[in-house]
Image 1: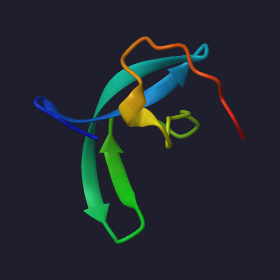
Image 2: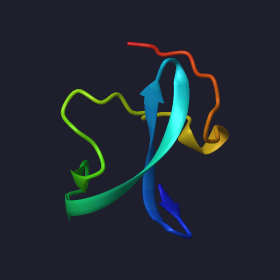
Image 3: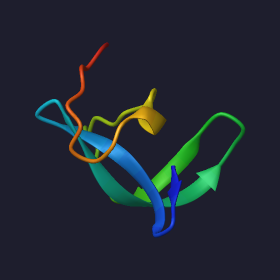
Length: 62
């Protein structure tokens, strides 16, 4: 999601949301490439991210 400082996602660490700055690459209608800020295996929030803030406790659903 866009912020004043650039793009960020919420990474899930110990059931808490941590705001992480990311750099975006190619975009399509259904996906966005993240080229910096995450590594393979990182879990991120993909729904409800506009309702949480950095440090929020979250419930992970599969």
